[in-house]
Length: 85
Image (cartoon, rainbow, N blue to C red):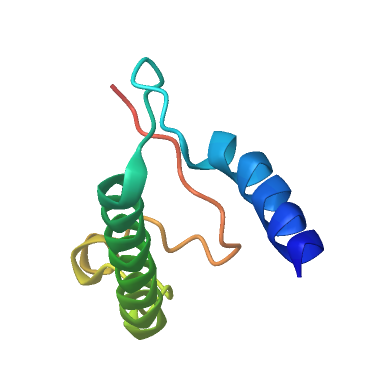
């Protein structure tokens, strides 16, 4: 059994440098991950809401009743009339 304790001791000496924390190194940590995850979920929700609202928009332009009443824009060919001024 002395071989097992020697190999366990050797394994522990290799793991100890991984467990040490460098106080001069700045990392975001768990709080940074949580903030990032919350922001990602918020952006996802906003995009889903925007997609739902854009689906409700009617992109067809209604004819302008006032322009038709005055005779403007009723050329029949669908082209805009130049304004004089």
